[in-house]
Image (cartoon, rainbow, N blue to C red):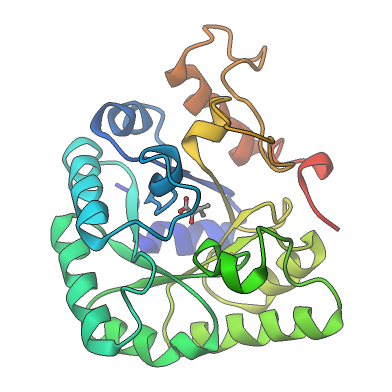
Length: 266
Ligand code: KIV
């Protein structure tokens, strides 16, 4: 079974690790077989499962329901679950909602933001709840950004993101996710912090990689993001099976053949 200690050792040894989003039992079982290292019950389920245009309508009860489905069906992966939009604005709400997700089977709670989360991160750590802080393109803030745009471009934005990353790690964050930031900035953050960093559209130098499961199986509604690779139809997946796609993703990330320069932003 993968734990935070496993991921810390991976970072120390330079072993790249995998994360995939997952929302239901059958896929969780297949990911167990492929030994995917970590699973994220992402609030992206609002878009790929529920059909919304953003992650904003997702509720804590939705997250708890899907987290429980995964926890029953996968014993190999470390399980991360998103606190959804506006469910961690106040500390008491954040604590109650984190408890619900941990009791549903999450091992780590993921929250989006920067140094403003320090008090929350440290309170949860003291209460036995590790956090993963998601920085860069944080989809819950789509209305602040004015769309899904690359973040951390330019010196000022890059310095702020690096400072935010260091602050939340100092406060006790156990993991970071970096989404859609220039590869050089992702490398700088990964080198600067002692905790494992998981990237999506953040280049090859983060400690781990995450993709939305539907994307990596070629099920994309609209434009295919630059950082996505379809592992289902990849010719190295000789069986063209979903299990084969998960295994190929695991192998590709471990050996460093995914992501390549074509998947990154500069
Ligand atoms: O909700 C999600 O799927 C995520 C990933 C894109 C990292 O946060």
